[in-house]
Image (tube, rainbow over all chains, first blue to last red; front, side):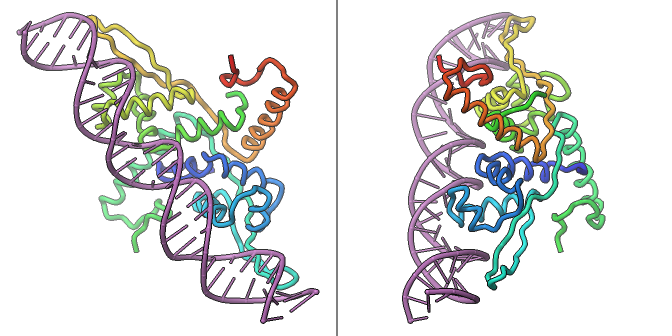
Amino acid sequence: MQAMNSEELLAFLAAVGHAQRLRIITELATGSLYVSELARRLGVSRPLLYMHLERLEKAGLVIGRLELSDDGKALKYFELAPFDVQLNVDTILTAARLDEADAQQDRSGEAGKHSPKGTPQ
Amino acid sequence: MQAMNSEELLAFLAAVGHAQRLRIITELATGSLYVSELARRLGVSRPLLYMHLERLEKAGLVIGRLELSDDGKALKYFELAPFDVQLNVDTILTAARLDEADAQQDRSGEAGKHSPKGTPQ
DNA sequence: TTCACCTGTCAGTCTCAACTTACACATGAA
DNA sequence: TTCATGTGTAAGTTGAGACTGACAGGTGAA
């Protein structure tokens, strides 16, 4: 997995650092599921699960896609995205260094090359 | 770094998944510092910093020790503890499996062999 | 004795993520 | 048309963590 800046690293850590979301990941590890089914398995309300899945998706941990079932119903399936982050002091220092590099680019008015979503349109 | 159960993993992730605490780690990476000095560098109130440091210490990310300076003043120094956690689906599944093993032990009334701090006295 | 440092802790406030309840809107089957 | 299924979202409440300000206590130096 490529190096992340602080913002991305924090999004990732905050997303995975929550008991419910760890359970979601555990459940999705066996295969993709649609939201209502997942909610039933975890004993969690659907809107709440939505929030967690959104968070996980933004951090790039899961991927959602709308599918039509055989009987024509729309089902929102979620599957795990592959992820692998080494977490140690170096990772954190690298993230901090990337922040400075990003800030440097911003100051010099360069077209956002690194920043994946921070680019203002 | 040895395998963690969910509780330990969550404590770790929640501790490191916070902007201020990332900055604390970054600052401590250059060497150990005492609380007041660290607070000044980060521009953070001392009680607040205390809270963060406590959190980091409980998760095993930093170590604090009281030292006497040359002129007899007590200084609370904090230094980084070495840590290295690989974060991927396997890590999380392993944590979940460890939870079950722990629960099993508890049920069979075994003297807490694994649980590092959950042992009731 | 006053000042400039430091540690340690308490009692609050504030803010935001987490969570609940309720809605609107689809589909296919009975 | 009603029921059981699903998606999607818009309120609201709550609770925990984050944060502030103020205190008590210690030291050595002026």
